[in-house]
Amino acid sequence: MSEKSSVEKADIATVESGPKQEVVVPQSGPERDAIVKRLKRKLDLRLVPYLALLYLFNALDRGNIGNARLAGIEEGTHLKGNQFYNALSFFYFGYTISQIPNMFIMKKVTPSVLVGITMVLWGVCSTAMAGAKNYSGLVAARFFMGVFEAGVGPAAPIILSFFYLRHELAWRTALFYGSSTFAGAFGGLIAYGVSTNLAHEKLAPWQLLFIIEGIPTIFLGIITVFLLPNAPETLERWFVTPEEKQVAIERSRSGHNTDTTTLDKRQLLASINDYKNIFTCLIYIGLNIPLASYTSFLPTIVSLMGYKHAKAQLMTVPPYACAIVCVFAVCWNSDRTRQRGLHVAGSALVACIGYILLISSGNVKANYTGACFVAMGLYPIIPLMLSWVANNNVGHTKRAVSVAMLNTFGQCFATVGTQIYKSPTAPRFFMGYGVCLAFTVVMIVFSLGLTVFLKRENDRRDAKYGAPKPLTSEEQQEAINNGIYDDHPSFRYFI
Image 1 (cartoon, rainbow, N blue to C red):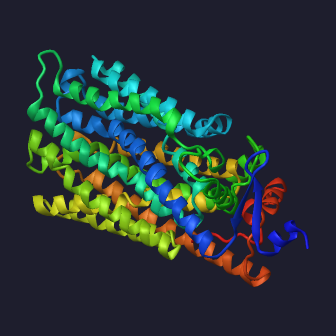
Image 2 (image 1 turned 135 degrees about the horizontal axis):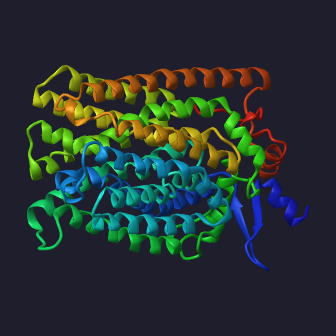
Image 3 (image 1 turned 180 degrees about the vertical axis):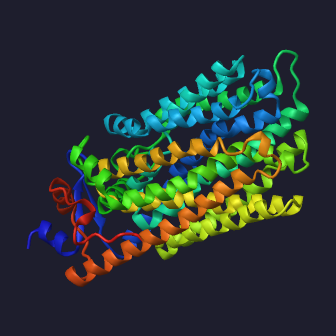
C-alpha cells in the first residue's frame, strides 16, 4: 500500500504549505481537538477583541451627540425647532445608502482595507463636528459619518463567519457588538469627565467631547489596515502554526465558505427573493426604531427624570452596564442551545416590560428601572440577528448582501426613532414610548413566526432526505455554482 493511500485510510488530510513541505492534519481525535482549541483561543484573543474595539469607537462616535446635547451643542450651533432631530436622521440616511455598496467593495478589496479606510474617514467626520458652527455643518458631518460607519458594522459578522463555525458565531458576535453597550457606558463617563474636569477658553465642552472621541478613531483606522486578519488563508506565521492555519482553512470550508466568486449576481437576486431575509428585515426594523431613539435620547430622558447636567451624564451608565451582562448571557445560551428565534423573542419581551414601566408610571425609580429593562432587552437582539442571518445564508455574496439588507432596512427605519421624542411631549414621552412598545411587539411576532417556518422546513428535509451529511468543499462549491445555496438537501437552518 502506498504512503498516500495509508494517509487517506487513516483519515488524514494532506495539503501543501510550501514548494517541498506538506502539513499533515488529523481529521478527528484528541490531536485535532487540541489544534482546534489552540486556534480558537488565539482567535478569541486577537480577532474578537480587536473587532470589539473597532465597534466600540463606532458606537462611541455615533452616539456621542446625545451627550453633546446636554453639553450645549444646540446652543453652540444655533439649532432651532426640530433641527437637532433632523441632524440625527441624516446620519441614518448616509448609513443606509452605503450598506450594500460597502459589501460589494469588500469583495473587491480585503476587509482590513475597507474597515481601516472607512474608520479613518468617519473619525475625521466625528472630529469635524467640533468645528460645526451651524445646522448645515452639523448635518453634513453627521451624513458623511453615517456613510463611512457603514463599513464596519455589516463587515464584522462576515469576517467572523470566515473563522468560526455556525454554532460558535452568536457568542463571538455578542462580544463584538457588546462593545456598543460599553460605548454607551464609556460615553457617559467621558462626557461626565469633560463636563466636570476639563475647561478650555476657546472650546466648549461639547466640542472637546467630539475631539477627544474622534481623534483616536483616526489612528486606530490606520493600524487596522495592517493588523485585522482577512481570512484563514492569510493568517500570519507568527500568529498560528502551519497545522493551526490548515485547520482554520478546513473549518472555514466546512462553514460554507468555499465561494470563490468575486460578485455573483444570482446570489444577489437569491438574497432579495429569500423569504427568510424578509422576515429578518422586519424583525430588524422592529429593533432599530427603539434602539436608535434609546441611544440618542437616553441622556435627555434621564435628565428629565430629575438628574441634571453632569449627574445626568453619569446616570446613563447603569442601563448600559445591565445590557452588557444580558448580551453576553443571552448569546452564550443561544450558541449553547443553537436557538436564535426564541432568544430574540424573549429579549424583545424584556424590552416590552421596560416600555410598559416607562409609559405607566411617573415615578422616577420606576422609569429608571424601565430604562434599564429596555437596554437589557434591545441590545442582545443585535448579535442574535446578525448571527441568525449569517448562519442561514450560503455563498459569500448572498451572505454579505443579506447582512447588508438587514442593516439597510433597519437603519432606514431608525430615522423614525430619531423623530418620536419631541420636546413638547416631555417629560412622559407617551408617543415615543408607545411607538417603541409597538415595534418590540412586532419583533416578538415575526421572530416566533420565522422560528416556526424554519423548524418545519428542517423537519421536511429530515423526513425527505434523512439526516444531513457533511459536504466536501467541492460539493459546496458545486451547490453554489448551481444556484442551490441553503436550499441544499444537506443544509439545516438555525432556528
